[in-house]
Image (cartoon, rainbow, N blue to C red; front, side, top):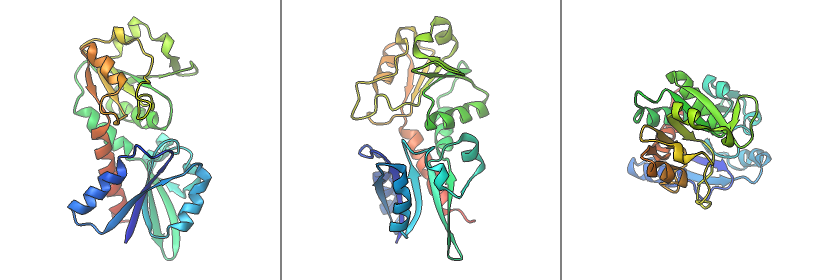
Length: 248
């Protein structure tokens, strides 16, 4: 039986395992999908040795960047972004090669485009981790200019306390790529000036559990349109499935 799975830590909030379990049942696919929580990325090598039936893995926080040194090759998108969320176990002539891809790009782009309007020409991207790299890759491809925002200012980074009315008015697309608000810490949120958000703003949260984070709730209270990460997850999961099953 083919084995697929998810690595990251912790994995209590995982969407992937129940999604693929249902997919396998609905489509009568003979396969298994399991969570593999790794307390440290160095445990990855032992996992590969322990599970010889692995065909593919998804990668979630905090390992989308840390996994790269353990892979044999990256596809151009993953290489450009510098982050991997999908691994294919390529076995040919008795040799195993681990190939890294990024289906977050496909998932985010497809979900975002369903909600974009003419006024969404500039974006604030909250967070500077692996997920933000996929987001800015998509924004760049769509011709949407962006500004990264983090807790501490730095080269190319604004801090939250630098977000003034001029910046908030000109950047009507705000994307949260941080884990703030994710279960179980549902009371946390990015500290942006929510009072400056208008009905012309679109707030997109990559978090999907809970369905409506504090970030989205406070934006909605100001009249903004809101989108959570659930559709993106479905699209990126299907993207991973295509990667695992395409002919090479």
